[in-house]
Length: 105
Image (tube, rainbow, N blue to C red; front, side, top):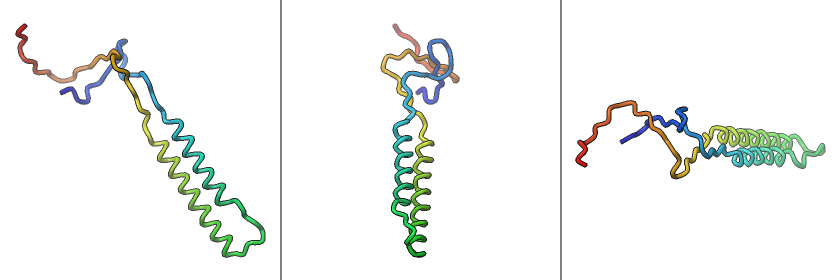
């Protein structure tokens, strides 16, 4: 069992780099949703509204803004996904003893 064994590339540098997905699409989607929530709550604001209507609109606007910020913040916390293609050369740095059965070739 080789759990959590550090990998290196063929040049000996730690870590592997092949195909990295930084999830930029999800981040832009979250930013767009956040923007639409903020704009949607501010749309239709007029000067002829009474105090109650203005207070409700302001409360909805603040709630939508906080929701949008949480969506973007959650998306920013997504770690990049590393995909290693089959057959990609990898070296393992074994940092503990391996118990092997005797070779009977």
